[in-house]
Length: 335
Image 1 (cartoon, helix red, strand yellow):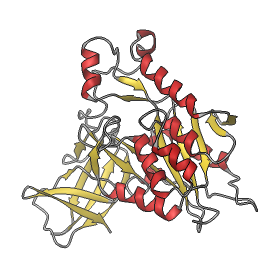
Image 2: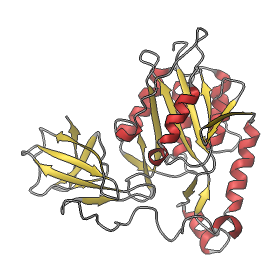
Image 3: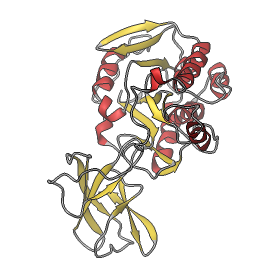
Image 4: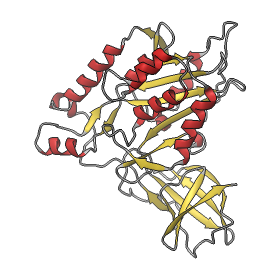
């Protein structure tokens, strides 16, 4: 750990996410919950490389994954998450350009899926190498179970918590993260628990503000967010919960190749196209739901021969495409 090892722990408390756990579905059928799109917030973390000052964004969500699963994202999987702003520090090793970083993150809300005020804190208790190693390990795993209540699964808040716990070198912060007052990790709780500064930041509409938040505020926040789901005055303005995010294939854009395949997800879906180059390699392209190219590249696996008409399957992203060959899923990595 160096004095420049820094994490920015982020929450968008006003974000809604679809509750897909069985208990919530039962409560919806019973009429207790009025809409499964619940205000539980979204979480992310930025790790600052002390050698290069690069700001690395990570999060977890149900983006292009089968129902019931999520995946961790980074610039490796989603180049739209690359941040150009470099961190700057003063002579006391304090981060001096949080507003510039927040401005760029806010401009990328389409890709971070953050909405409403972005609340964040700066934490100086991490070992950057350990944090990055854990965050990257989860990225490479592909997709795995998504659940906010099950400790064996993950969600956005738990991913941030576990990344911090894997790298934390301060006993007080570690205890706060290990034993959250909210029982399970929440986006806002992470921000407050991980902070090593006096203030919490809020950024919205181009304006940076300072806030005073305690861990108890996170209890009130998650409680009110869940209670709102039982009152139509809050839920009527939320998305129709009979629509399962972007799982179902939308109208196909006319510009897409005919063989492009839709891979859906509750949080995000996309089109993937494979153009075979040779027996072991192909050109892979990802299009967003409207048909705009997000990335393209050459992918290969020298040990696996491609089928005649290869199709992408889960998990596929910028880092690698997954293709089923003779009933087995194989990864073809970007060159």
